[in-house]
Image 1 (cartoon, rainbow, N blue to C red):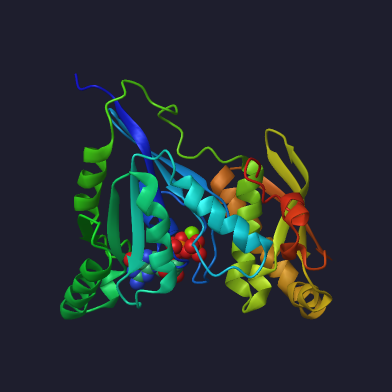
Image 2: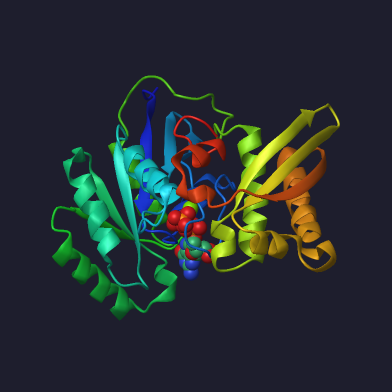
Length: 300
Ligand SMILES: Nc1nc2c(ncn2[C@@H]2O[C@H](COP(=O)(O)OP(=O)(O)OP(=O)(O)O)[C@@H](O)[C@H]2O)c(=O)[nH]1
Ligand SMILES: [Mg+2]
């Protein structure tokens, strides 16, 4: 029998490059939330892949972006730190976007890691073959240290077999697994609930509103037949609070219904969800407040 192989693979890149989509696609499960908004992922999120004697722990990270506040700083630090100690770094950049200064900033930061980096050119379903070839050539010019480039599309399923083979080749023989076989994530249920609520807000609102939101769990009670959750949606300004509540409370009602439906499908039990909206002025600007909103390196 083959020896057990197990290890960690981190996914890094700018926001919206398809990191969370790729992880969910490989795992066949929605572990990280995915939206069309930049800066969807805010924490390091582990997704666990098990196949026979191979266990790969994927580490999804927040997109590295320009810093405007303490939350941005926390997210960038989380992303770059998360690559430490992994066996392989997957650096994602989309085929349909220009190479930006944040891409080069990330590469510069990863240079001293002494960990193999594979560049994944993502979303290749959105470009022609000629455009993709031009993008690959452009990357070869700016990222000379990167030995391996794999073009992929999570949506079209392209390049994923080659990617999985490359990942497996970089996972060491350890003789043990880090997590039990049936586990696909190590995120606490409270965190999943917070993310599901935030996902609905990201989907339903625009501009600064989605970025100004934090979710706090006020009550979390589980019985055999029912999960009862009370949560606060914390916004930065009264005007944003108004948007979340909506005309005659229509928006908060929709957020609540959609979040409850997703929670019921994920947890497989009936859910009672009660939402409140409050403001905490400029919470993203304050290091102590972002911690209190659950953005601390060790807590969810
Ligand atoms: N066309 C196409 N769209 C994709 C593909 N992969 C991801 N997307 C879309 O790109 C958007 C961003 O995807 P995410 O997976 O949330 O990106 P991310 O890198 O995790 O973003 P952050 O969490 O903000 O850093 C979503 O609208 C996805 O549906 C792909 O292969 N093809
Ligand atoms: Mg993400």
